[in-house]
Length: 226
Image 1 (cartoon, rainbow, N blue to C red):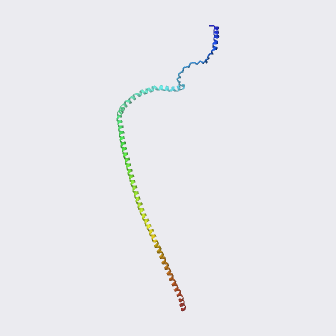
Image 2: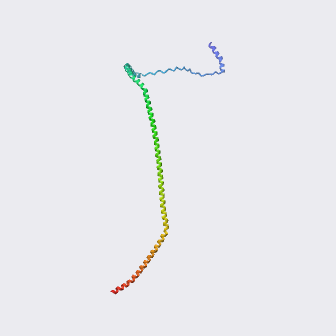
Image 3: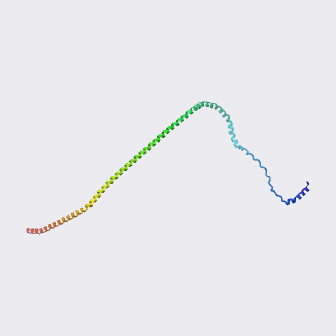
């Protein structure tokens, strides 16, 4: 097909494309395929660490034959020790049930002792409670006796006070009854005293009159004597 024919074909096809507009798609960029994920490379030791570990490894290699020789030398000793320890192990195995039985017996004995001690403790507690109750009863009885004695003493004291009060009241009543008698006696005594004093005054007056009459006579007799 020549170039001219292609031009003609393009000219003939132009009106069709003009009539129906073509849909333009966006051009996507070419995406390269994903690369396979590589496995992580093993961590390499640093040369400085290798240098530090090298002398230790060399010493360990040198010591390896010595360790093997020591193991060989120690092997017969270990075997002899095992042989010596074998009868001890066998005896220990034989004695194991005896030890277990002894332990069980000891546990049983301890339990029995604990039970006996518990029974004794409970009995002691009961005895203590009984003793406390008895003491409380005795104390209550003592309190009651004290109360009774106090009541008796109070009654006796009341009786005595009532008797004394009665005596005092009787004395007061007797005094009240005797008051008028006493007043009358006082009046009569005062009257008697007044009468006595009046008599005495009259007698003294009479004596004074007599003495006054005697005095001039005595004077006259004395004058005659002179």
